[in-house]
Image (cartoon, rainbow over all chains, first blue to last red):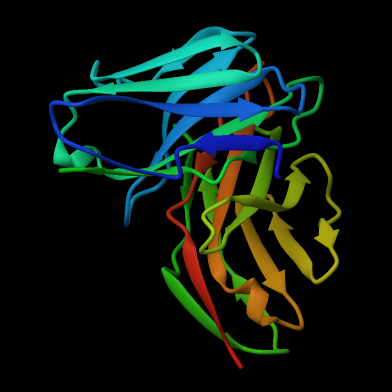
Length: 114
Length: 116
């Protein structure tokens, strides 16, 4: 395993459903991120958590709700999504010290909204 | 605002040959990091190479090397002796040196195909 685990790997949900994506890291990192990856678009940063506190929310619709109960776990709660929300959702973590060595990513959750 | 541009949506290379992927970026900062990530069909983004802007020496990792031209704001990736396993999407990314959170800015990616 890579150190960052995302579940489920695939998710199909209706527009009225509520579901959650889970991300877990065992690297001792102090920051975690949610990115959205759509076809033909750059990766879009959705949320950043540092030391379990949300530090950035890039104008993400309220139908996406993040939760970071501790430094190892990150959730993305989904409700009343739209078909355009179908995408690959990537979780990443990093350790921010004096130097930055990049992110470690999970394998993503492929979300389809029907 | 910082931006990262990858002008080649797709590239193709023959196995064992060399290919160069282009990346340019726009920033007013002088200290920053640059990265190349690889995303194979398995979807997991894998760090290929990292460069610190204050270092003039180009980073290398085995068959992967970069040509970092700070004045031109260019950061190309060279893959030597290409292998079938190199087929993937490649993303260039930038991060400002300062600040406590590693907010990476990505380009749109280049899809690399490797022909046997």
